Image 1: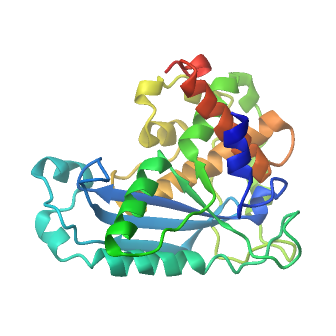
Image 2: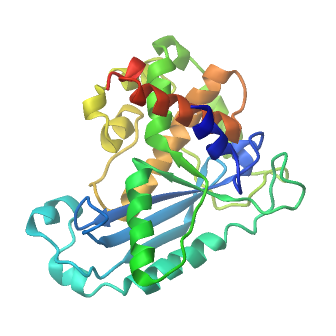
Length: 290
């Protein structure tokens, strides 16, 4: 557990004390021909940036990639990409290089948090639901394309959900969420990032966390958690759409984390939540029931 926490908090990642609202997150989602990165290929990549906890719909990425392996018919109802559409996708090498360039554009933004030094670049943190699978496919795609490996600090939003589900109480959601986002949603001269930014509308309901804890883990996919948090789900398994959906789930989980902490969250809090969730899953489930 300690080894994983040190890995999450070390290297080129943000300083553990960096406030989340001074960070750059990129929610990413991939559609694939299957679930095995050794034999299956990427079909689509979608991503959206969050500046702090505010989603920036002017900063999105969408790529359709031409796979080397066939698009299996049984996968079409899941990802909705027909073989003819996939055949007209772009070369994986070109699209993944474009994604790298797009991500690199965020690393020059000034750090508004602590510990990294005034004016230092902010490392881009990847967000995702079951992020490890997307990372494995992106890594395999880069390797096949002859591109260099890329690593980023990461936050698996599923781990954050598991942590809150395990530690939360229904009464913990009796909170001033509306006030929280009225404050976070306004743009002033003291904000780290400029408009246009999208702050979420979060249900100010004591039942929000209760709804999360009531989801059986076997049914706790991105869409079920999003609905429990009051996020409208329009379709599923579109790369950019799912990236935006995961971003909205993250926006709504952060205030629940902060309610438990009694303060604004910093990067180290996310890393510790991920560590706790991973440890619980590894040791026979613990509070997670796995």
